Amino acid sequence: MKPLLSTSQDSNSLQALGRASVQIIHDLKNQLNGLKLYATFLRKRLEKSERPQDEMETVDKLIAGLDRAAGDLSTLVQYGQPIELRKQPRVDIQKIMRGVAASFSTGVRTTGHLTGQMIIESDPPSLTGEFDPAVLTEAFKSISLGAMKMQSGDGLPTLRVSLKREASNGGTALVEWHGVSKMDHDPFQSFAGSSEIRMSLAAKIIEAHGGSAEHGNGTLSVRLPLTS
Image (cartoon, rainbow, N blue to C red; front, side):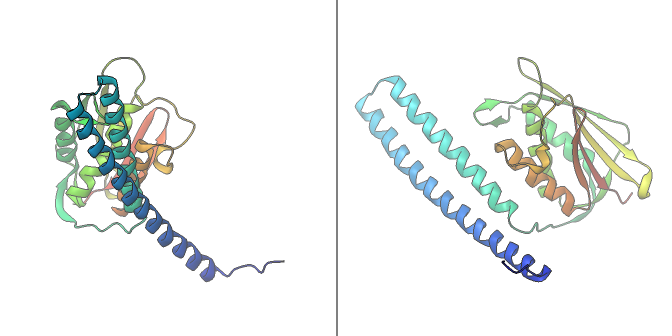
């Protein structure tokens, strides 16, 4: 019978496994980038030889798929590393979210397709705290893109996002993405696809700021501590 590991041994084993996983993912990404280089070279050869359009489209899809896979692996590498924050005082969550919404309205693309429109609903004039604005912006973008893909219905989706202040615990910002279709898993704790990988990293960023990210009842919710 194999002896049980002590808590410290178990922790060390998990850390070693985590480091090894990050290295393996990094190596896989390098291999994908090599394949993309060959695919790009092939596309240039096809252009010169005036090959049929369907062959060009096939190579384009191959390159796009390699890009997506490499991007997912980059996100996994980020997830496996500690979150380093450069916090600044009086960063306004509402201002960050309005910037994210503006980027959608100007035609942000994800995996080759235009996303929808975001509508921000906010009661308080500001929601300020000590945050890393650049990192938090990327987290909100990832959650918003994921929420867009989870919208039900046909056509270009419209995503409604509400912001408000909760009085408990000295003041907490609550950001909610509404109208999300029901899922059989928590997208903040999943690696089932590109959106879930990025949303899991976003949740880790939120938690590094002392907040939380949850999914339930057709809503994605993020809470972050405020300073004023």
